[in-house]
Image (cartoon, rainbow, N blue to C red; front, side):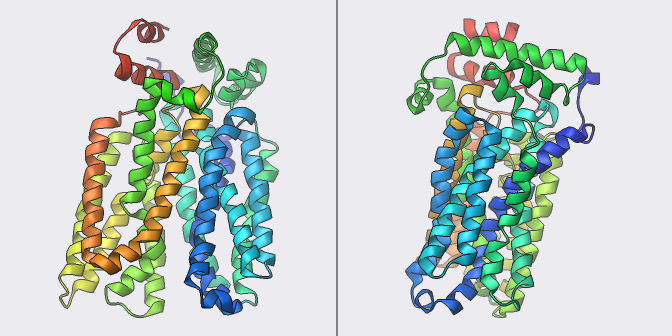
Length: 474
């Protein structure tokens, strides 16, 4: 109604600064998932017991994911109870402790403990950063700002490959690779001390003066009045239904069940359509295709990581212009075609199948990263009511990490049993199911305020009853 009150992406340096600092959590997330593949090669050289035990190797890799599952599950409660800022600080402390333990580990068992601590920190950060950014963002640029966190995840993965290459000739190779990950966490902790708490969390905790002080740095006066009025109305509604909130309360509410179905489903399909299969095993996939040079395989995997980061930049622009749902559907359509190309290239072992496989790999990343790479995290940061945003965000992130673990642990086994071609065809079928799921269950939330998103779920759950009409009236 009032175009002059809209905030453009680069209009307010304060918002960009808050986003940049809080999305360092995404960098930690991406770096940790990428660095272990290179570090493990040198860990096996230092510890003979690891070299001769596939179980220990798998445990070193997967313990961080196990920690992230626990961190994400508990991180939602920490966010709601203590705030987004304190949750970020806690995640940083745990991450730094984990990086120190890993770098100084005298044996593989202490290293596994360090991986667990790092995973806990990453899990808490994966819940906190999207919610913190979303609650600080004007609705018209919320998608792009939250997607900046995803850019930092993909950038962290790319950085991890570069760090792996940089430290290959340095004494104590893997200790540097793993230990240096604590530096961004120290930087984020230091900067977060000077940043504010989420204004929405403050308002819901009845700390209105502190909340408005933060909002005045984001909006001009006219828009500030709009935002405060919306928050006041939301607080009044929350006080009317306030009681003891817990996990069971989430499932008692039909609208929250519908929201979690959409959010958790997106997180599960993000993993089950194979993205971390490609990121973790891209060198292996390239070698499976017939390129037996390790150097070429690593180079191509570095290119894949660079394409992933580049695609995320495109997604930051498109998510607030094309919209969440349309972007996801186009993304999944391209992913389906790419997976079919990959499947056919492995089934048809012609003289040129190697390059067809690499083409399929490139197309897959090119289509996945702008849509399915960015949208699930953005949607989950905006579709839940304020009182449940932390706990529901934590639950959806837990779904993502559990799905991540399942796919990472099963891909090579399924490929060995059924063949690589049929395995990619299975992923194509899952991607088709994801397309249908998004088309039916996921609403468009582009440009909506949090109040409007809550109204949307009430309408889906109950129709236009008195409560939803009252909210619409306000």
